[in-house]
Amino acid sequence: MPDGEKDGGLERVIFHVDLDAFFVEVERQNDATLVGKPVVIGGLGPRGVVATASYEAREFGVHSAQAMAVARRLCPQAIFMRGSHDLYREVSKKFMEVLRSYSPVVVPVSVDEAYLDMTGTERLYGMPMEAARTIKRMVRDELGLPASIGIGPSKLVAKVSTEHAKPDGIFQVQPDEVEAFFAPQPVRNLPGIGPKAGEALARLRIATLGELANAPDGPLRRALGPNNADHVKRRAKGIDNAPLRERPKAKSISAESAFE
Image (cartoon, rainbow, N blue to C red; front, side, top):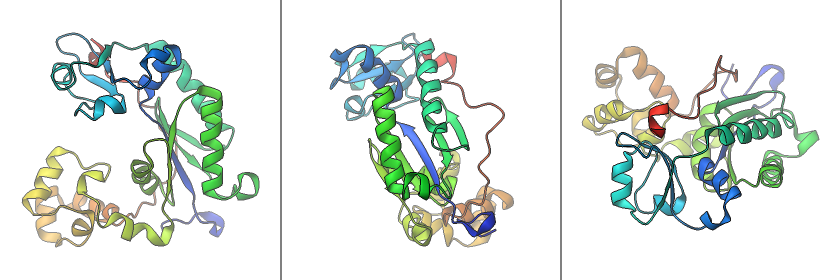
């Protein structure tokens, strides 16, 4: 089945909806004095790490999965909070309910993001950009939260598109735009490329997805392994035929150690 198509010949339309700085924005709903200030949520103990940071804190170099001690040095003026786990779960449940009112196929990825199959819904909600604006308004009206939405013919393309939608925007990539959209992007933007793979590609002087897509097979297979190399090359072109299916269990809020 060609990328971007599904049974019946309909062009696949996949949304990736991501709540921006979710934990922070939920806390701001409860405490308006946090609005506009750098806020960092995560573990406050000696081994704690950042779960999320407001965009104001990110300007100082704070980011998720960073040691909290480092975050404190980078942005000492920030407001540091442990977070409200039960509240986040409750808001996440309401978020997923909003999404399920627009599509019968909703695949949660974590508490603050999910994929929707919007194929064939134009008669109900209009064209994809219009439908995305409607969903964003509903999330804002019901939960008071900003959401970014990436739209593409597959999960992969929708996910990468979301990074271009942030914060609080919408970004769509058409099927005939996918390869050109992927080509200039840094390899780190490809989901699944971790630090080790990134280092291996850097040694091969591969910096962009276009370079990765056109890399010679031999060196790439030696660096990443034969099966993984072929898979990564396809994805670097934006090729993703994976069906949209819910995993047995969605990822939890975070490792508990992050909130110690």
